Length: 111
Image 1 (tube, rainbow, N blue to C red):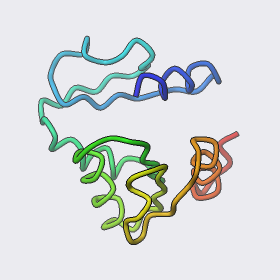
Image 2: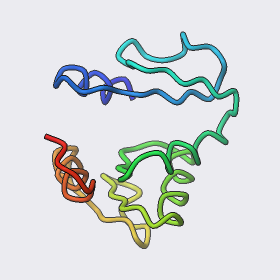
Image 3: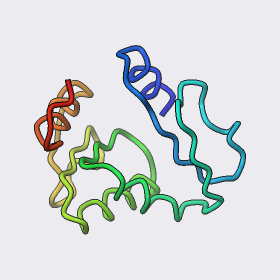
Image 4: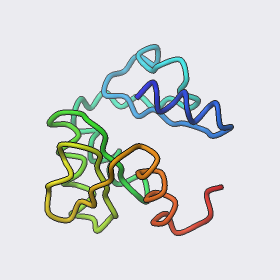
């Protein structure tokens, strides 16, 4: 997530970190807005439902749960790599293709 947040900052974007714990210092240095939840992995539903589009790159079971929550909510989901075989998930081959998917499915001009 640090690489994502760094890329966002370098392009002039704003990032929000929704943390599982209660210590805002757990956020990486590139997160602009920190939201502490104290909810552990239960925060995954908040993450999945807060955006318009979900892009999964890597991750473990927490990422899998976020994909499931997003699909249940009818949100567009793409994935690079191992999650691309899930029914309803659009496979993409690179982070650049994921960004294209996000822009195409966000419902507004992001650039």
